[in-house]
Length: 293
Image (cartoon, rainbow, N blue to C red):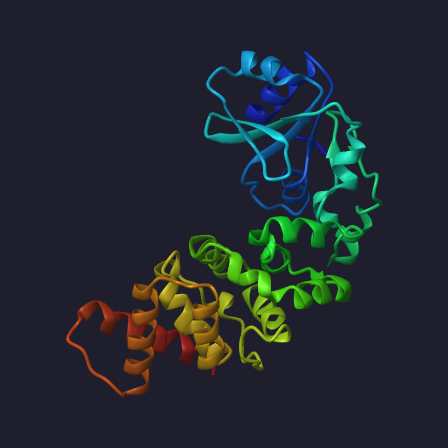
């Protein structure tokens, strides 16, 4: 049985339910079902924009690219986005870009108009009709969403969705570099980075490779949020060319790229340095890599 255990989310959701029909939808439900810490909470409601703003006067209001009014606010460090609508709530499910984002929760029951709940058992990510193609054409920045979801969940991306990504690779060039970099960090921070890299290789975006080991089993505190160290470790688990392509594909900052190249050169003995930080990182990487042999 699906339930919300966070008192802040319950309080906000119940405050909306007291004034009109509302449902939670999308990523919060997906992440909760997968035992992933949700980033934010999306709610659609039959309340008007003014009704919601009266309840949360500190909220900000904006229009989405698709024309929806989005009311955003935070409570106890929890981020909420509320979308007023006159539509039947099931339409929100039918319009979802991906199956994993199509579930609804009305406060009592999990609602699955698209019959996507079994996909959580079969562990597959697919588009709903032509929704993903329509969405990515309007908003190219979601192109990497199936890849980042696969990195988070370990789920397979369906062949039809991979074909959609392959046919629309030109949209990648329209994504803001800072958004690309954020997607790269999401992939690097998740437990199934190698799987995401395999999908990127299958799409011809990075060099193909044969995984030698899972770098996640070697993660230590020093690697947390240190992305060039993670990239060095990944280059030994995959290939230098694969990770070089990854850095270029996602337009990672020059500092990360330069530190990555310097550490690789130190490990291969083609350069030297008096930088104690880099020398200590070299020793750490050597120790971690030796533990895989």
